[in-house]
Length: 432
Image (cartoon, rainbow, N blue to C red; front, side, top):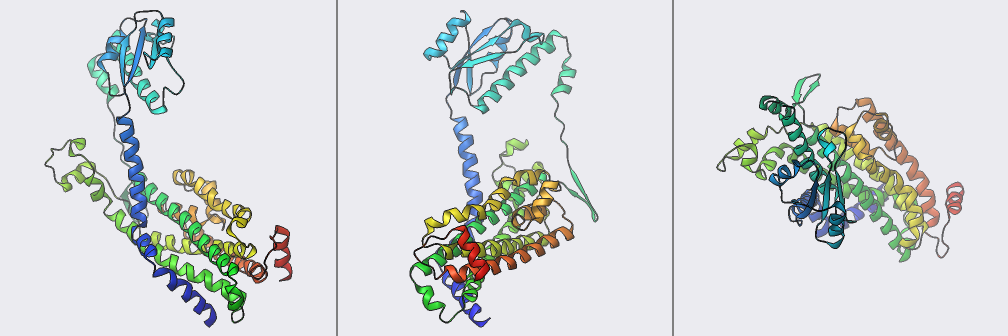
């Protein structure tokens, strides 16, 4: 144990003292949130700055074109086409129009639909939805007028009802905030996904570097291969534990102050307040309820990261010992990484339905569980037997994986020149 501690301490100290570790620890979650915000801002900005599309309208009804013109937006402008549809089609192909809208007479009776034609690549999905909403609104408005529907009935049809949600618990009631819980669950799951891959790769590259430089031949003369492997995994794991604990604290602080942070970016006019409204007034008008997460959520977040890291780091270390260079490890890495990749692929269905058979099954299988279980814990109340059982299975699988990996490591770390195959790894496990 003393030798394992020495190896672990060396791996820990030589990494936590670097400037990169300090910066990523303090700024990691902030950089992730900033990245999402920048992507969202650029997407919205690109849509608002997109060129206005000129649409020729062939209106056989004789009444819809004027209504369409009244609703011109920043996205499209309508021009009446008083020529045959074939001539308008030629105008689109020649570039005089971005597209043309064919409105048959039967559209006001529901007997036919509207047709929009454009060149290839001339219409994105967001533009299509905007155009559909505008045309549907105009047609609905005209049909209601023709049916002599009163303004009172129209107001009822256009009224939007706000539905507030309340979560019932054994301790009482609390305001529901599905979006907030989903956001926290996604951030936690994604951080574990990235961290397991990054730290696992750090272990693998460290093993390959020591093997390539022949330093490991000197080390194993005084430390058993198993002790060296376990010390390396635990040392880098301790570094990850420090980082994830800090991140858990930052996420906790972010959830507590989320309403204030969001209020900073909300225009008071959007919530029917004057420009001079205070942050407290904006927060009250938003009626935003921050996620109410207990301390146990963040504790399990750290513990499941640690269990997932230990499991995958031991496998990555075995892969590193079996190859002479990092490029040779790609064939072994894909099967090992596949459960992690599938976990992040299924993260949205898990958020939407955290108690489904898929979510429960993935959160109980050790190779998948670190990400699905943390997401479920953040989104809903998970029975303790599921959380505890999943964690026990995860640690038990790690113990089995470290035993298998140590047998591969014992032989592979001193094997040079020959590229190991799967059959070689099986042989090392059986006879090492």
